[in-house]
Picture: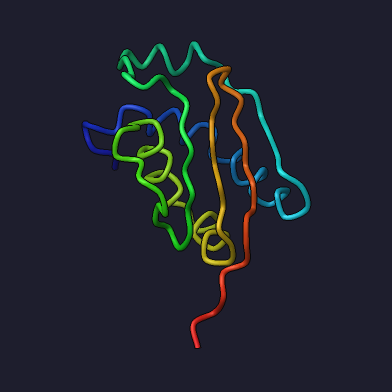
Length: 116
């Protein structure tokens, strides 16, 4: 299911139900959720840039450059495999981010215009 290079995919899969709830709740206000830093560190892959990232996503694709962040790429991969997340990403642009303290943030930025 996940490629050998998807080091964080199983971790993100564990958090997927929480992330979906945050995405739904973000319709009203930005949301945040404290993740456990030791879980990311236990994956054993030392991120040069740290674990913090910002991922802007719409229609299942990153709108910003996430090539340098395996953490963000694996999150996107897990979301792409979720029907509910895919539906939400078709409806709006989301900004998903994690800071250096492993606080996960979800903002619903804008509605996506339906193609005419």
